[in-house]
Length: 312
Image 1 (cartoon, rainbow, N blue to C red):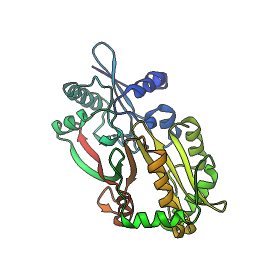
Image 2: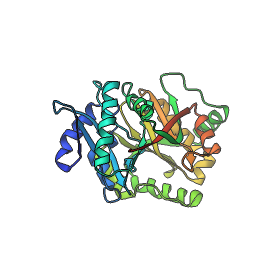
Image 3: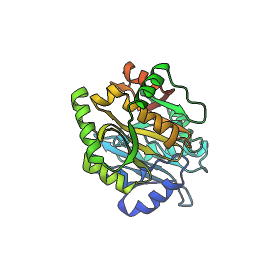
Image 4: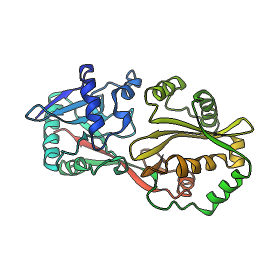
């Protein structure tokens, strides 16, 4: 078994493997990963078997002698195809430890891919982490709707949606990222003293590169944009990357109506609708108000796990 560090010359075979893996996501494509290459010291790895066939990828970066599942991505452990077996994954971890020891890497911080993002069952790495005495150091909670079952809203969500319908609010897909970013940045600054992870220029570039995956939906009242949702669409799942609601939109119930439109119309043929996490302080703090809003749409808990593995 052979492990090599990713370089630009590997781009095509990396992307091809991503397209055929059983736990792939479009943001593992190199064009996505490299939009913020100036912020991270990339240390992505490629694993080849004894016949020199590529069998696994690990998107990663290095920081102070610690290898992280890429910190610019929401999650990302080993990416594998449907030929991956549990015994092989154990062998990969042994090879990985030897490789990292030679590189003077002290430990790994490993972010597992939540099962809702698996195209086929893909938890060989979780067993390997257990076998190698990896320590669970963080657990975030994301809120996800199973769209294969009847979606049940709370009374409060139903009331708000019905209220919004009476206001003649229009919901539609849009390419007006500038208008949405103006709304989003204003809301984040006022409510959280924060900024979006992406700049407007970055999200426009990514949306252009991944037009089938990154989509923007808006709600307007009398030509005024009152709420918006930027979604990341993968094979079986849609994730709300950014949601924003103006003060007027909040009074009208516009964002609830927009989310209802996404769930029942735009995403009806998907398996899952994922709102994202409601945690701070490496998972120790739960924003109960935020998660209650998501659970009002019928979403329930799925965990994002982070492990630490010492290289001995």
